[in-house]
Amino acid sequence: VPLSNLGQKELLFKFLIIGDYGVGKTAIVRRYTEGKFSSNYKITIGADFAIKTLDWDPHTKINLQLWDIAGHERFGYMTRVYYKYALAAALVFDISRIATFQSVKKWLVDLREKITLPDGSNIPVVLLANKCDIEHSAIPNEQIVKFCKENSIGSWYITSAKENVNIDEAIRYLVENVIKTR
Ligand code: GTP
Ligand code: MG
Image (tube, rainbow, N blue to C red; front, side, top):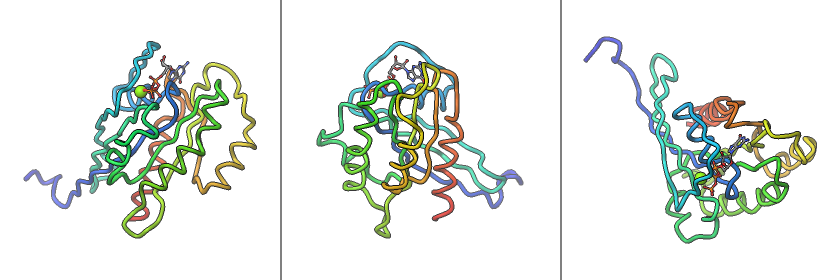
């Protein structure tokens, strides 16, 4: 065993990426794990996942499993299976399509109905207002803030998978939250 590995912990965290079709979930996962972006829309069927390993601190390595759930899957019978053992979720909407913000509530209700932590509490959720490179949001910030408050969403970020805005920060927020409650 190399000296540097002594006393090192290796953790596995499963996170969900959810939200309506076309909001940019796959693009966010790709940006985060591969550092790439493509403007082609290739619909996700069922679910996909990608892994990124984080050297969190000198004692902790985190294998982050990101489950990219198809937007069309919301009420599909598989979601319960996909959600199992998830420790946190990023809920994404597209600032250029108001309907995707209106769907956030349904995703959240469905998520919380399907998954709770072993102690009965809700998993941490971060809300991502994606595609900020396109235009100014049609949804006022105050409305998003109010929504998060009323629905116990810990934090939200304006993001762009295309221009790599706040993706790392949002995932980091979730990792910190999960670590804090372990
Ligand atoms: P489903 O798999 O159907 O649930 O959709 P999805 O949420 O995975 O969407 P996806 O990541 O495939 O992105 C849909 C389209 O939006 C693609 O054409 C992406 O290139 C584009 N897109 C995603 N994120 C951004 C972004 O931040 N900015 C811009 N301009 N386009 C984006
Ligand atoms: Mg997808």
